[in-house]
Image (cartoon, rainbow, N blue to C red; front, side, top):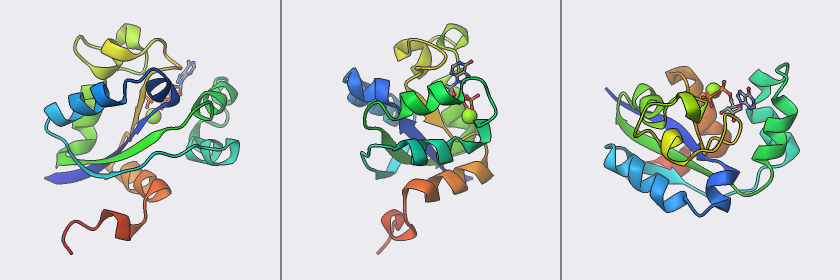
Length: 141
Ligand code: IDP
Ligand code: MG
């Protein structure tokens, strides 16, 4: 079934000029871009986005990382988008990511791992609305 999911190109991706390569990889994997913007997260917005990890030891490091440069939230659409995007980006730690995945190809560490992807259809819906309004994602006017 056609589905939508959220990717975020993280500050390392922006800083290292890897936006084009990563977007190209996603398009080649059959995703259609239906929303995209570049924004700078604040401590408050990055903290809220990752609130589920607030009790984890890496939370402060994660919030600091996500605010160190601009990020590029992207709404992606295809069949089974949520599961497919997780497969295409690879494991959280690039050292454990499968060959040919985005994180294996471009990420430097478990923390600085280039890209975020929603991990369930329900979370995708919540995360999309964190960055995009309904009217920004209308496909047929
Ligand atoms: P995911 O991005 O693959 O879904 P999560 O476990 O949801 O991974 O963690 C969210 C983000 O927090 C990761 O993408 C990574 O940037 C950061 N992170 C996760 N685990 C660690 C860690 O052990 N050390 C440092 N950062 C981490
Ligand atoms: Mg996650």
